Amino acid sequence: MIDDVELRRSSVLLVSGDEIARYGFGDGHPFGPDRHEAFMRELHKAGLDGRVLRASPRTATREEVEAFHTAEYVDFVRERSAAGQGYLDGGDTPAKRGIFEAAMSVVGATLVGVEALMTERAKRAFIPIAGLHHAARDRAAGFCVFNDCGVAIEILRRRYGLRTIAYVDIDAHHGDGVFYAFESDPDLVFVDFHEDGRYLYPGTGAAEETGTGAARGTKLNVPLPPGADDTAFFALWERAEALLRERRPEFILLQCGADSLAGDPITHLRLTEEAHAHAAARLCALADEFGHGRVLAMGGGGYNRGNLARAWTRVVQSFLESDPRTADGEP
Picture 1 (cartoon, rainbow, N blue to C red):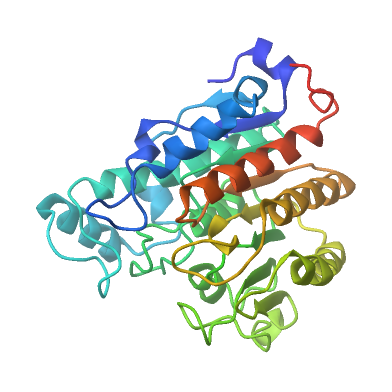
Picture 2 (spheres, rainbow, N blue to C red):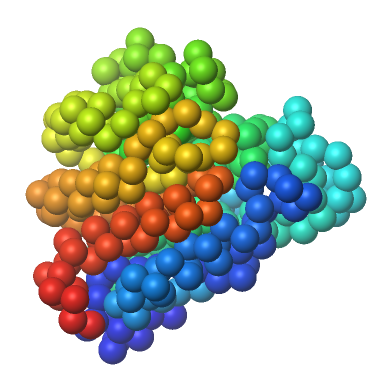
């Protein structure tokens, strides 16, 4: 719950808590349950945790999750999670006991953000453990159990009647679970900067993949070569803004995975947190230009804890700086 005193203080919402912190896999898995705390420490160190609205995650309903996923797949995850053995995919995503409940909370957390923005309780929202962009409608993939991004898109349409929605992804990995689910959808504007699929999982997201049928030209895939840095990112960013201005979406989702920063243990790009700060700031400016101001960011990947802490904190900082009530540092 966001009270009226908080509403006068900021329009930037942080959805965080133990419910989503538990989403992760132990025994040395890159997506460990310590990622949430790493971010929260950095946010506090930067003095930003007291300048945002706060909300707790909730558990998504099955009806909400099944707006994107098949009922059969949801049952499969629930059963495997209860058993706590094996994998939910070919070997990347363990069927850890309790992962079903944690994944339902991740979806719920993203929907808390959606609800706050759509009811004008906030203009921007950030959820650190979210943006699970590899899960397909009927299967897990790449550490991702339920695709909260895809659920958010479907809920924005079914519950709130939005038509044109933008999904922007700067994670090192291509957001294939979102792309292929909406590849033929002309009203889902898709922008994805990622390491070239010839060098990194999931091997998709070629520049030629621009959508199919009536959706051709509504998708922008920007594969970056290994070692690409901020110079390359900034030079190509204008292409994203051009497509967004052409389509003028009613809501902007940002998957801001930090595995695109130099020093990530499983990727090869060399961006800095300045790329994340720039993307967040420019998307806020565009959302304001379009007249609604709605930008919801999800943490996504990132397996160097220092990197993800800095990158996500810079996203929150950019959100705050875009709000005249908090831009000067006053609560």
